[in-house]
Length: 446
Image (cartoon, rainbow, N blue to C red):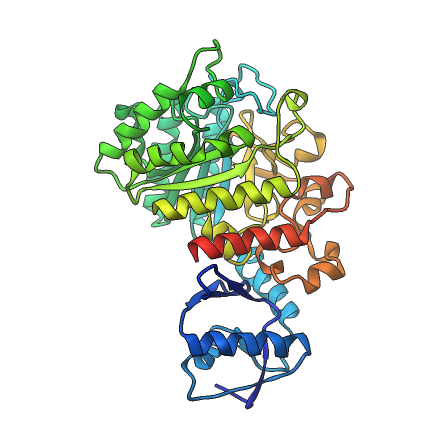
């Protein structure tokens, strides 16, 4: 209900002009997005933006559909609302109080690929039988006590499908337990997909493994140079063959085709995405791209990465290509919905279970002592070191004044990565770059 004739513009409102003279308007605190192409409304937007620069209130016109929409979607708000406090409250309600269980399993420390930018140190260790058993026993106890409203399992590695049979048996048992307590379970995997043959894909669908992130770094020559098999041979053909087989299936799934872009991949992006359009123009396939990064591994000195403005320019170039081709975009939620940019390691209900049952928070610096926050025992006991865990999840004290004034604060909530904070560093943020990325996504996919 409207309490006043004068409203203020939300501090989290974005007004993004497009090349055709229209606008995309968004509120980053609630995820509202609308395109404005009415000429009269566009003229009004210019006035609103100008008024906001001078901290003037907006005179609400109840007969204006745009004003009504803006008020309903919190673009216009009552003057007394403290939106920063509301953002903190919303985070507490949506994230901190969420009792869904999110487990990332390090199913294997080994991989059948040797990607040139990989940060991991491989060793021949697969998830142990007692670790699988401990997780199943925990699920039985926790769901009986109604501790979790839902269970999400993310498969990671190394390559998670190396120990396929033992993993599949675990997923079958986990699904049976969740089904018996009428608790929904979802399963996804970050995988190179070379081992997900058609018959395995069918078996995984039966245990609710329906979400995949698969990296394809350009067409065959570029991909094989960056993501060779462990023996040095090319991996492109096996990955694409399995993806095409998945497409031919009738299963309900989502596969995100991720590309780690550098200068060369960006230069050849149009031909690559034209191929993706030709072969994977299917709503079950979505596109994700991110710049190749130096992640602290032994390969850092040998890889070429984009820096500074070149990253933003490449990002915009790729977004335009994907948009023009009409490909399904798998990035919008991460870039535009509140708290979607918050690192999983910052969340109270998110844990990484290593192959030996060690409970961790982050998948990058696995063996660092600060990343060891507990242990899951074979009987299902979940031992958590709360002092260590608190260093990962407590966030309010780190917010700077810049965070409090930032228009995209509700999306990243003060920083995307918790790792540096745990090791004592002050989280860094390129505020203008983050906002530009978000505005680029809204421009092309809003």
